[in-house]
Length: 200
Image (cartoon, rainbow, N blue to C red; front, top):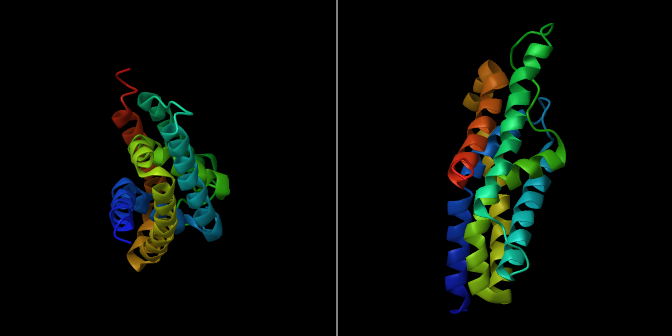
């Protein structure tokens, strides 16, 4: 048990630090659920699919089976940027409907859309996970996988709670048609900016 504890603590710390921004994304996604966005089960399943796709890539990289140039990971930032732009221009295409809460098109739809945003938002985490997995070995990686699985459940629960707050719903009713897409554009821009792609 004493040998597992350091790995367990490292896994918890790694998940929290590398996925803090996912709370914002999940809150935005859960807030659009039932308003043209993905269903709750699609958000949860998409988050799991995205996180474990990142883990699989990191394991492959740790085994030397895959080389991921960090600066090209920035290209994935174009995914949330594109989704955000689509969400911003959708109200202009449907000028016949009133521009108020519930009338806008959510930037993400379906399980694969959620998974795509999750992968794009966490793509830079591969550079963090890879050396940790290489050092941890098979049993250590198993601990990381279990912790990450539990972490996703906690994060989804937090997203549901935050999205269900009266103030969040009221905010979405007033300015959700541009606020949620703007969040995705900012996240995508941050991914591109911090990846080194712009200076490549």
